[in-house]
Length: 223
Ligand code: GAR
Image (cartoon, rainbow, N blue to C red; front, side):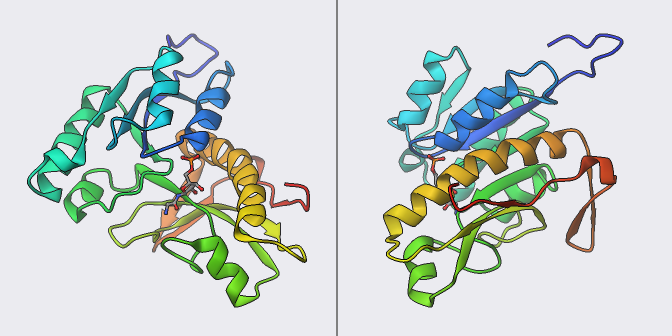
């Protein structure tokens, strides 16, 4: 996209996925708004058969499939992944269901420029099976978090969270569906603020610079 006098250029973002890609779709759809500050430069997957990759290709978005099983080491895969991200001109990286641990070296190369969405209210319930573990713990409020990526799994400065109430009779499936709907609302908002440079990061805490860039808290029983 070309910058005009009144519209700042959109920042190119690479999205990393491993599967379905519903969060990626929500970012792609949001990025089509003329005033959205980011554009999707490429969708990259470590699984060539990821359904989200086919969807992105069908949308005319550049895609890259890097089969991690074809690489001799995590570092070798991450070096090629880094090159693919750079080759598409991305300034930022948005992980959207990218289910692969990264080497500290790759994370360092994208320091404060790589974000992730996780289906829990971090720092609770890092890792897998978040909804089953939240239900087993008896929490009444669950949700999702967008954060800056650090080398430790599901760690890093929190950019935004959406709260989703746990309802009587919830199963991991029913709770997960409502949280996923909240993810689809939260991630585009956070990427928009992040790409627009709305955050200060100091001592591992992310703060919005201006009240005008407020990220409303989401709390919706229907979400
Ligand atoms: C999403 O729920 C996302 O939060 C989660 O994987 C799912 C991907 O779905 N990510 C993680 O658990 C990362 N720790 P999607 O492919 O439909 O976006």
